[in-house]
Length: 264
Image (tube, rainbow, N blue to C red; front, side, top):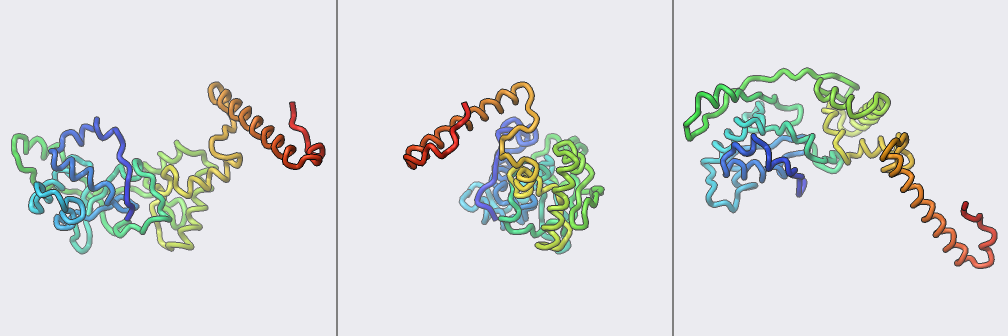
């Protein structure tokens, strides 16, 4: 389990978060670092009280279940159906908001082992307007169509469309092959490929090295403002190389005449 996760400033203007009660908003925020690498979290009241709200005497274990239901009702979490009856939730925005390095974290205990359920919210909010207590939400099963891009890599239809907009076809095909080979040797089970395309992941870094060999920040086809930024970077590198050659000439002394002179 990691020691920290990211929280974006958009939480301050989120309508869903704003509608939560103070205790529910606090629970939702403090639970972010406790989600696993795939965005799942066990929400048994005793576990949340011990792990998340241990020193909050004003939040009792008995009311944690109602707070969890309130967060699920707002669609910030989705309830999951497990075989052993353990209460588990899934954060639908986790993969988009967090920079996760799967190779450095423990594998998810619940990924591909539970069914994500969809919350019916509009009817409940209309029927329960004016009531102080939020009843447990009704659940229906969500049928998410998955696309098998490789033997060990699957994607939902929506995730596949998102990746197609972010990356070119050549880059995607290379990443799918790379990820499929890694999964076949390490995990040997089908995984959700979208989670490996987070910014800063090892897969993205390997792709940058493959398709951008001149280093991070290099602009292959620069135009307009990007062209100006590239020219400034090239000028800086030329000055750096010239200073380096001058220093080497001073250190070597007489052999400095042998070294090639920098271009004017």
